[in-house]
Image (cartoon, rainbow, N blue to C red):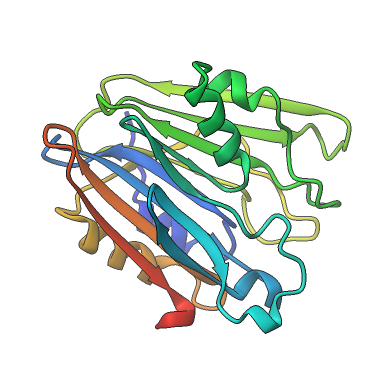
Length: 236
């Protein structure tokens, strides 16, 4: 399997939008999770990640500058009974609520569609990491920019290889309208020894003008302990 260099992919794309990386640490001991947000408008850039009891949420860096909270204020990461959910929107809560009632990641997302932000129709990207470190990624996106047509794609990864991950992001690059991600999640190398190292590498590789916030977690699969790093441009 050819592995891409995550830092190179980020440096070569000025606007991947929002991105999820799920995978396994090089020593195979930890599940690795990455989530970042970017923004082009003042409203989108006016955000930070803050920790909650079961994950993180987005908040306005300056509440007085917040124009429209829809689509930009949500819980990107939530945990439930050893399962971690990572998404780019309020579908985090949809998945969490479904799992709590005995449903599945897939069944929850079949009730959702892409974001209603014409003309971009931004894809909803989501991931779930199970207790054993296996994970699933999903993208819900418009078919050829049609506001009435949605394709829902799911990618399961069992017994992930040490030092590898998969990268899914909303856009292939900048543009008007923004071009939605296409293809399978990109296989990437994960060789950073800890969350701080990986966070610093990813943060340095994201476009300086457009990056907003970053979350990185290394979850020890044996002990359940975690090492989490959050970086916010508005708190730098």
